[in-house]
Amino acid sequence: FKEVDKLHSSLLKELEGYELQKFEEWENDSVDAAREKLKMRILRRQEKTGLIKVNFDPALVRLLRETRYFLLLGDSRLTVPDAALEIYKSVDTYRTWTGQLNDIVQKYNRVLTELFSVEEPLLEDRIQKMDTVLSPGLTDLKWRSKAEIPDFIATAATVVGDVSGVVDVMKNNLKAISGILNKWCQTAL
Image 1 (cartoon, rainbow, N blue to C red):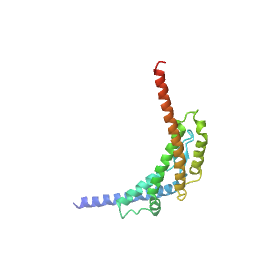
Image 2 (cartoon, helix red, strand yellow):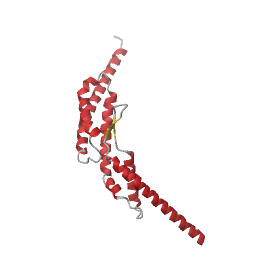
Image 3 (cartoon, rainbow, N blue to C red):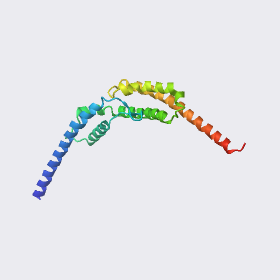
Image 4 (cartoon, rainbow, N blue to C red):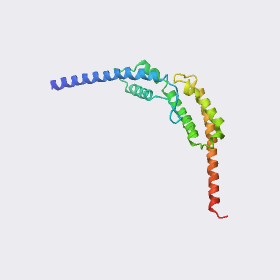
């Protein structure tokens, strides 16, 4: 029985050492990388398509998720680094912002992809206004720009939402006109 107890103690010590080693690796790799990711712009334009996307790096998502799990674990041996806790304090803010930005991006990309080439000149000035409003998110605003982001989101949501609404009306009118013309074509004159 003593041998089993020694083996158990030895194995437990090795597992604790391994756990501590992995935690330190996580701390060194993830926290510093995530802190750098907060310096990235909030939006990014895709080169091939010209469409935009929210630029919230998966490394940040991972750090926020893992920090949450470490806090839920509540293990006194593993103290969550202050830098990770500092980033984690804003988890709800980041979640809200990414959700709102994803909505804006989805509407913007839908406007660009759903318009026919003959419709684009009708909305050229509005598309230009959308691009102007979204420009700070593509060039200046970083995830650390906490004071400016809410105003940017509010303005972008209004402008992009208005243009998206106009496109929806245009598409619905086109669909209605097409339906009427199809009925006329089916009926012999």
